[in-house]
Structure formats: C-alpha cells, structure tokens
Length: 378
Ligand SMILES: *[C@@H]1O[C@H](CO)[C@@H](O)[C@H](O)[C@H]1NC(C)=O
Ligand SMILES: *[C@@H]1O[C@H](CO)[C@@H](O)[C@H](O)[C@H]1NC(C)=O
Ligand SMILES: *[C@@H]1O[C@H](CO)[C@@H](O)[C@H](O)[C@H]1NC(C)=O
Ligand SMILES: *[C@@H]1O[C@H](CO)[C@@H](O)[C@H](O)[C@H]1NC(C)=O
Ligand SMILES: *[C@@H]1O[C@H](CO)[C@@H](O)[C@H](O)[C@H]1NC(C)=O
Ligand SMILES: *[C@@H]1O[C@H](CO)[C@@H](O)[C@H](O)[C@H]1NC(C)=O
Ligand SMILES: *[C@@H]1O[C@H](CO)[C@@H](O)[C@H](O)[C@H]1NC(C)=O
Image (tube, protein in one colour):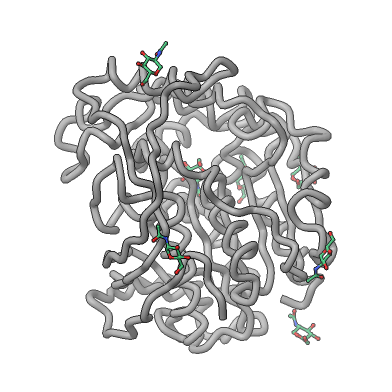
C-alpha cells in the first residue's frame, strides 16, 4: 500500500481512556486514541501574533482578491514523525449489528470539535449521530488535532492539513482493524463523512489512499473559484484573548471568530436557523489554528483512483465555500475531482448556509445522505 503521507507503524496499543455513555437507542464509548504519524509538512516562516492587530494583518495578507503575494508564511518541506492523542467517540445502535456493519467516520470542520456531529440542543432535529443511529449505522467521530480532547499543539505549526490527513488515515486503519468500533467489531464497510475542512481531509484521503474508503459523503464543500473573503467575515481574533481561561494550553496561533454574529455571517443564512442553536454553537465552538488556514491547498484532491460512491452536499446559500450561492457551483466536481466515482451526486441543500447540521431541515440533508448510502447497499 503506498501512502504519500507515509504512515508509520500503527500502534495497536490499549485504550488510554474509555468511557461508556448509553441511552435508549445507542451505546457510545469515548476514547483517547494514541496515534503516531509521519507526514511531509511545511517549514513555517511567519511571526507569532502578539495581539489581534497582528491577526487582522495576517488575515488581510491571505484573504481576498488582492491577497499579499509577497507574504510567504510557508517555506520548504520536511518529513516529521510525531505522536498525538485524539479524542473520539464511537456510537453503535443499541442491540443490533446495524446496517450491514457499515461504519461512518465523521470529521468536523474548522471552528468545531466532534460535537459538530452530535448536537446536545434538540438532538432529534440536529444530531447527525442520532439520525444515523436511527437508520442502523454506527458512527465514529473525533476531535481534530488541536481541538476538544485531542492533543494541544502549536497553532502555528502542528495541525497542518497533511498531519490532519495522516491522522485520519491512521484512524481509518485502526477502525478497519476493528479497534475503537465498540460492539461493531470489524466493520463490513467504512464510509468517510466530513464537514467543510473535514470534507477536504476526507476528499484527500480517498484521493491518496482510495483503498481505505468504501464511499464518501462530503458536506459543506465546493471546488469552484470562490474567494476567501469568508475569513474576513469571521472577524478572527486571538482565541485566548477573546475568552481568557476558556481554552487552556493554546498559544496565540489559535484564533476564533469575534462573536456569535461573526459565526452567523459565515456559517448561517438569515431565516434558516434558530438563534438558540446559534448560541449553542458558540458554547461548543473551538479555536482554529492559523496553520489550518494556510495548508489546505497542499492537499491532493483529484481522486482519479476512487471508484466508489461520492456525494457532495452544500447549503444553497453557503458563504464559506460558494460565496453565498452554490447553485450551479457543485456539479463540475465530477470531472475535476471524482472522474471515476460511482454515481457521483452533487446536491444543493435548499435554503440554508454552511452549517447544514445546525440549520432548519438538517434531518432533510441527513435523510438524502443516508438514502444514498442505502441505495449503494452501504
Ligand atoms: C506583505 O507581506 C510582506 C512580507 O511579509 C510585508 O512586509 C508587507 O508589509 C505586506 N504588505 C501588506 C500590505 O500587508
Ligand atoms: C519525505 O519522504 C518522502 C517519502 O519517503 C520522500 O520522497 C521525500 O523526499 C522526503 N522529503 C524530504 C524533504 O525529506
Ligand atoms: C453543525 O454545524 C455547525 C457549524 O459547522 C456546528 O456548529 C455544529 O456543531 C454542527 N451541529 C451538529 C449537530 O452536528
Ligand atoms: C479514471 O479516469 C481517468 C480519466 O479521467 C482515466 O484516465 C483513468 O484511467 C481512470 N482511472 C481508473 C482507476 O479508473
Ligand atoms: C423539530 O422536530 C420536531 C419533531 O421531532 C418537528 O415537529 C419540528 O418541526 C422540528 N423543527 C425543526 C426546526 O426542524
Ligand atoms: C429539506 O432537505 C431536503 C434535502 O435537501 C430537500 O429535498 C427538501 O426540499 C428540504 N425541505 C425544505 C422544506 O426545504
Ligand atoms: C446489505 O448488503 C447486501 C449485499 O451487498 C444487500 O443486498 C443488502 O441490500 C444490504 N442491506 C442493506 C440494509 O443495505
């Protein structure tokens, strides 16, 4: 098996922590998963942020049509091997092996941890995990490096897209071997599900290691020439200065949108969400790393070797990936990215913005995602 971001040894060590959380419909366990990955990363060449003036200047340098072409924060490449721990949850349907033993591996996008997939507010309307469980699927969802319960690392360097990809590849190998899958054991099939940056990571996984995935459902994604102005719209600030004491062990390389309205500007479309849910997302938000804004373009996305089912689904008015209008903006991905996929589908989910799962009709989106899997006997 050739792995461009070479995975080093997979350590099948025992679980560091494991906690059981059950309800009427599901049995969940939380883990801290040790991983060791080798990746080719960028040598970074930019100054630490002293204050949010520096952050605003950084954003001006990278976002917008006239981004500063002399600003070169990334230097040469080097190979690094590093060990981290990743916070993760597996949920299995109660009392059943589930649908053909299919496991969904879900990766959240920037600004969130694994709770993206499992809203505590009104879960019947918003939790992807609950919806998938009700259809018989098991779901494994995790905190990207630098978020939630995963290792806290420098926001200027470590959570590079290539490292996040190598971690996703290693988690996939562990799950396929039946580790951390709860009562499911060895999964029959494994489907990658993503949101936004998590979708780009899942896309890069099927592009570089197609043999690791049986299907991909990518939400909040597009490939056209949208501008990067959404980064300006967030109003990013140094996270620990916005909320002192809230996020421990994060350096100034971790940024967060300035307030709930910055969140709404990028993730939500007016009239398509409940403000109570918006404020909940503020409660569970996570800082994003500056390096996560700089490195997605290093991911190889064109997936000629992936011959399995692929669905991409984005909100009609997604500002982050479509500049506010996804109509007519998604279908070209078939030729450009997934030329050999089985039954490629590009879906414009009506009436909502980037945060499909936190908008009205979230379950409408989940419904067509899982019907698609069922149609392909997954
Ligand atoms: C562009 O980047 C260079 C190199 O970092 C910096 O010296 C310059 O001030 C930047 N220009 C603007 C307009 O931010
Ligand atoms: C990193 O490793 C890859 C794969 O082993 C190799 O092709 C590449 O030359 C290495 N790059 C550097 C900068 O050492
Ligand atoms: C839905 O997406 C939003 C924005 O990405 C995130 O805040 C939220 O946690 C997600 N909710 C669920 C239930 O997945
Ligand atoms: C995928 O499609 C390309 C054309 O877009 C073709 O050249 C290539 O052989 C195909 N690869 C596989 C694995 O089917
Ligand atoms: C939430 O779910 C309930 C039933 O479970 C439904 O009546 C209501 O319309 C849903 N609300 C939204 C905003 O989806
Ligand atoms: C809910 O979402 C589904 C899937 O995108 C869509 O077919 C349906 O029209 C949506 N319903 C409303 C009321 O927007
Ligand atoms: C399970 O897989 C078999 C064969 O691949 C298929 O016939 C069946 O419809 C699948 N079941 C479900 C519930 O998807």
